[in-house]
Length: 319
Image (cartoon, rainbow, N blue to C red; front, side):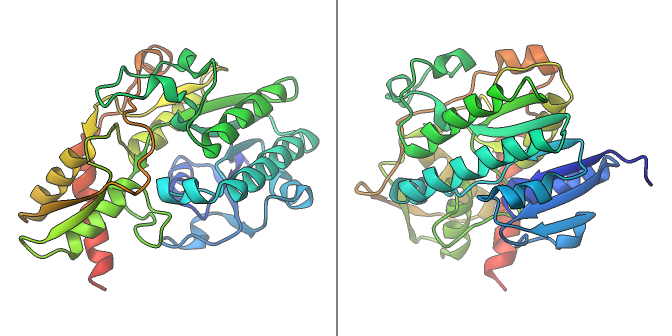
């Protein structure tokens, strides 16, 4: 199988990363995974090779990128809104080190193409002050004013990788709230869909479940399978600018709780914790450019995606 294209997925121990390893293997690629930890919910031997490495250091990034044609750079110290609100210096330091050293190692090892997973967190606070927010276009990122350090780091790293465009092809996606099975659902790093699915799974009919904020804050949520398809299409396109990959269906957190409760067949009440972090008031993805460039947009409905996610998390909390 020497003719298989050799690729690296950094962050292969994380949610999107381990799904991407599986996806690329199924596409026929030879895949190396690299991360500071092994995948929690899939075997490490899903990758052809898995390197346990701290990618904050150049030597380790050089080991990871050796002998591969393409890199999918997903490694990051991250979590949900609670985590990124209270671990600002860790997020900035770790992720700048990871991305700077990955970019340089890819250059030194002659990588031909690199994909970087950026985030909708790069978009400015002043465009996200209303729940009924206008969908965010790629050009809305500037003038810059992300609402947290995670967003600032992502915006900086976009520019960092683009500066290496003289040495290899660079592709950048701005992910909008990716969710699905086989991801963190407890412990403080989980995102809203997983946290809500866990709370509903553990609740008895008629219980109160806690919601951060008043629940009127809005987001769009993209299922992992759509994220992978969009990522692969972008990586293999000729488009060199950042591109939104996300759903353009805006829902409130209260609405999402109701969807999950319906899936679970439970009648639940909401207890709103107004002192908890909740991020921007509203955020949605404008997919005009995505449809034009990739001739594609996410297909999996929120209900379908949440049902898959809920059933998986239910199976975990019952163990």
